[in-house]
Length: 132
Image (tube, helix red, strand yellow):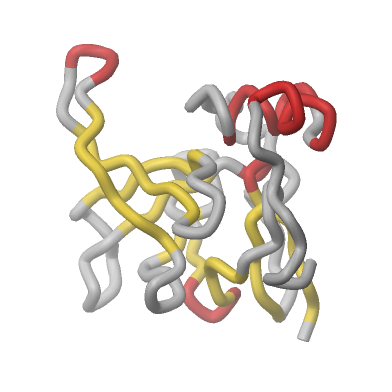
């Protein structure tokens, strides 16, 4: 997707553009069931893109198996995701969303096994994959 392409402006436009599952996660801050997503065990070499707008978000070299049931990365591409406090479900977490379209991707936790210490726990349905 070209960065010149117009993004949907209304939730109705987003609901026409996205699958039902992608709409619920990206636009309604939902979560897919663990161990069910297309990219949970994916091992391709390339870039994970936002399923909403096509922005490049995560490099496959930063992906690891966290055992949680969702694709996990120890870092995002610079400037491609934004974080905000999420106090839903009776806890304080850090939500991650696409910096281009604002789509909800998942959450980041400070318990990653690599030197970054980060675990970006991302919904597969909010991603697409592009091989190198």
